[in-house]
Amino acid sequence: MADFDVVVLGSGPGGQKAAIAAAKLGKRVAVIEKRNMIGGVCINTGTIPSKTLREAVLYLTGLNQRELYGASYRVKDEITVTDLGMRTQHVIGREIQVIRAQLARNHVTVLQGTGRFLDPYTIGISGEDQDEKKVTADKIVIATGTSPARPASVEFDDKTVIDSDAILRLDRVPETLVVVGAGVIGIEYASMFAALGTKVTVIERRERMLEFCDLEIVEALKYHLRDLAVTFRFGENVAAVERRPRGALTLLESGKIIPADCVMYSAGRQGKTAELCLEAAGLSADDRGRIKVDENFATEVPHIYAVGDVIGFPALAATSMEQGRLAAQHACGEPSGDLAELPPIGIYTIPEISFVGRSEDELTRDKVPFEVGISRYRELARGQIIGDSYGMLKLLVSSEDRRLLGVHVFGTGATELVHIGQTVMGCGGTVDYLVNAVFNYPTLAESYKVAALDAMNKMRTVARLTADL
Ligand SMILES: Cc1cc2nc3c(=O)[nH]c(=O)nc-3n(C[C@H](O)[C@H](O)[C@H](O)COP(=O)(O)OP(=O)(O)OC[C@H]3O[C@@H](n4cnc5c(N)ncnc54)[C@H](O)[C@@H]3O)c2cc1C
Ligand SMILES: NC(=O)c1ccc[n+]([C@@H]2O[C@H](COP(=O)([O-])OP(=O)(O)OC[C@H]3O[C@@H](n4cnc5c(N)ncnc54)[C@H](O)[C@@H]3O)[C@@H](O)[C@H]2O)c1
Image 1 (tube, rainbow, N blue to C red):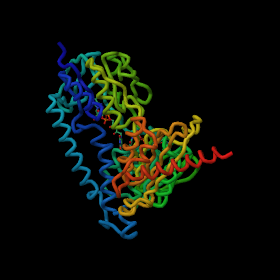
Image 2 (image 1 turned 180 degrees about the vertical axis):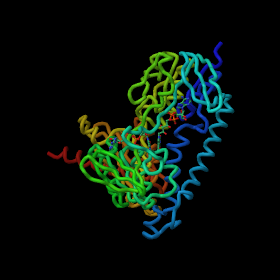
Image 3 (image 1 turned 135 degrees about the horizontal axis):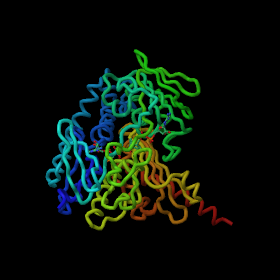
Image 4 (image 1 turned 90 degrees about the vertical axis):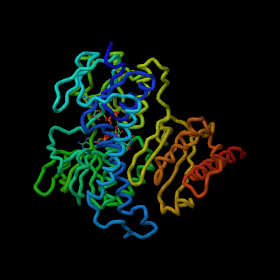
């Protein structure tokens, strides 16, 4: 008999939920995780520290209150990394306790160390001061995540030239910062440091950023970030980064030279598969370290599953958890269902962005007729109360059957608000539901009703003119 029914490699969101789902089905489960990494990238270096840092920045800078109390309003004048780090460390500590307690009460064994395949059913576990231990399992779930991709030509020193892990360990808030790569990580950190008063330059080789987002909303974000002194260099490639005693020079292929206290690379991530000895299990990874899976998250070796960032897109904590749960259900012979069709996207920039469903560009490309309904926070009583004059919610409504096709939100509470739209869409709801619903007043949720009325009025105008002879 194997030592465990299910062994999970990695304790990030994917691994945790896989382990707990299997334990709930009465299986003997173990999670293998490195020392000091319980909770994975999500808790230790990714989602949770960055989102907590964002809250600390918003609170200490008083940025969200300036509309009401004036441009000079601040909670603290000289914000230090200690001020920022305190909140982050507190939340990380608490979250780790929560995860440990959840695993313990579900009788999941945590094995400390780095795992690698010795054969398709055996994992070797080695730690800093221990000989390699062996455990066997009937089913194995790989949830080893990713780490920041570091171009070989760039010398990282974790102080002047850094990645998104090291940005959490800076010893001071830089006055100037170059961010290489305008993906979600790059733009989130760019907006946080800009809010702190750092002069940020973002370098992106594509012609635009966040291509999967609604263009109008990305334009609004860019406007806001420029207002916070962010400079964008689109269509530019980094040729070299040179470290100097008092900072770094970023040399672009176009010949520009950008001086800064610090350069942060956020130009993609690499699957953590190099140390797994996948070949011993009959598996392989692609050049970005990603493992191929089927619709049940099973790899080419049927008793081995892979979930989370290590399988690539969409590489979100939210989806990783769900993949973990579904993989474990399938591995344990329990009906597992499919991953939900309407995953939301939340981007925690300042201001934040969130959406569900399709964008105007996608609908136009696919020749799907739609009407747009918009609500602006400045016309909502709650918007005035909180001092958010720029926020907006946009509904995309099918002109044919009046169903919601997409919801795009920009501004305070966007990542929460989007779930109202997601629920209406998931239940096949039409704009009429929102037109007729009564919302609490004064709320930001009321923006759904205002936007729905706007879309309905526009559709009515089309209908009226169409009826005219
Ligand atoms: C800066 C940043 C911000 C982010 N913000 C968000 C956000 O706001 N919302 C969101 O949904 N997502 C966000 N993400 C993405 C999110 O963090 C990931 O999608 C999520 O953490 C992936 O979960 P995972 O289960 O794949 O594993 P990870 O969280 O990547 O954890 C994998 C774990 O496996 C362990 N491991 C690796 N190899 C081995 C081995 N050989 N043996 C044992 N253990 C091993 C690692 O130590 C690690 O702890 C962010 C990511 C970053 C970097
Ligand atoms: N709020 C969230 O949900 C959230 C937050 C952060 C991260 N994440 C996840 O983390 C993953 C990784 O994010 P990321 O931002 O590191 O990667 P990414 O791959 O999304 O973005 C990298 C960007 O860097 C650019 N780039 C690459 N090399 C470059 C170069 N040499 N010069 C200039 N630009 C260059 C690319 O064109 C791309 O736009 C994402 O897939 C995302 O899902 C999610």
